[in-house]
Length: 312
Image (cartoon, rainbow, N blue to C red; front, side):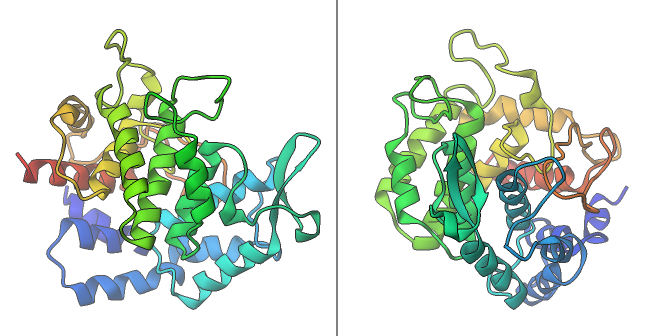
């Protein structure tokens, strides 16, 4: 199986990242492939599914949920924020909806209801981490939202949507916030306060070898070893390792066992399966079958292993 060729012969959202991360392709060739993302495949489909008010909708789901996780997916495609079609979609979302609490139910509603723009976030750090990441990537970094998340960091270094009721951090919430803070740093440049907070959050995960209970060393949740894409708000080892790779830092020795689990899940043909799927965005051609080879998981696993092996 030519695994790299399989990734290159796919949706532009995947192929351009495979070229960038796994081949020696020229910068010009990579840029040429990236241009296709907003005009073909899943990137174009996402843009076409946007509603007039800037949201994305799925029957039976609140607007905030499908919109937040569709923006997460659009960011994962690596589409160019400066592309006119992308910039128009982001502006439509920013002007067309507001976070609003009516009767204890937060959702995205019309601007007349008042409230923050989508990129300024609401009250839960797991949601706000995604909003910060999207805003920063698509050139709407919110300093106010960043400060709120930094201020909400718990004593153990992570975050939890159930705080202050819960004083223990959550793997799920922590990875969402870390991704947001990393995108914010990329957008604004040097931000010592953010870097310090992010390092504390990373330490929360590293102390637990990315998947173990600190108290017993046991696997904290079997689902952490199941790789889904897109992950939505859920934590798993592949998502965590791809985050650490994206920081540009050298691998910490404490991730060795986690990397071993990634390697152990490689199939005999060199690919990785999709272990789980969460249907929280509008239906699209992205949906890879569960328990079948996954291009998204294979791309992420290969670039994680390449990053790790370069240091050892």
